Length: 252
Ligand SMILES: Nc1ncnc2c1ncn2[C@@H]1O[C@H](COP(=O)(O)OP(=O)(O)OP(=O)(O)O)[C@@H](O)[C@H]1O
Image 1 (cartoon, protein in one colour):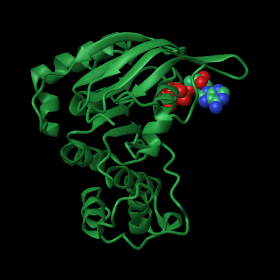
Image 2 (cartoon, rainbow, N blue to C red):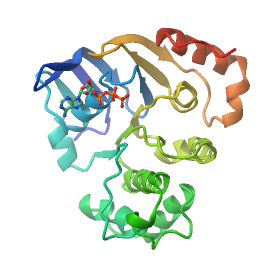
Image 3 (cartoon, rainbow, N blue to C red):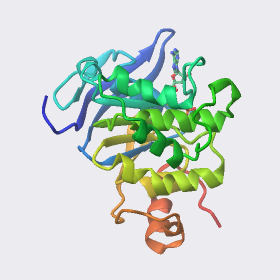
């Protein structure tokens, strides 16, 4: 496979049985190594677009290519990692084993140090031996983020990975995690405009269902980005541009 794990979606369309058109004519390229945030109104088709890229959903029309491979081929080669809203951890394995299993499935050698480092980074130090049933929703999500990163994937698909995580931890994750996924092509679905500006190189604003692209906004702020950046004029200008494209009210 090529080194460059950029993603190309061409004329992508998906209508669910029952006639719900979720994605329509989306043509979009995600540059290798960049983080792109997908934002849009609730229910507009963001998760569907991500699932099409992951190969978890079949398009009715159009194609997805990941470094020239179909999503199914890319998955078989262990190129893709996902962390979705519903973390789907194995209930009989503790946090460390859930994370470690991802390496095994990707046919990578065990790396207990990396597992421990990631659990620390997502704020789960001391919970390596805890099973999902004894975790909060936020802890389960953070385990899933560690699991997604442990294989150092070339393509990282994150669907509201911080949705159930408390505000303080969210800010800490937003500060610490990008250095870990640096180099990966990352597509992040989020409802938070500030999170999109803080984490992404580029923000794609989608329309109400069926999702179409209404704005493509570059975020030319240098990395690493500290959460304090949210107070700067440059940050506020990009956030305001994104809110305007979403037809959201501006903060007073
Ligand atoms: N498996 C499915 N079968 C039928 N309809 C579905 C299915 N999955 C999603 N939909 C519908 O497709 C539309 C888009 O859903 P999707 O989850 O992609 O939106 P979203 O933008 O991610 O939503 P949210 O922001 O609320 O998470 C919605 O109307 C949803 O009800």
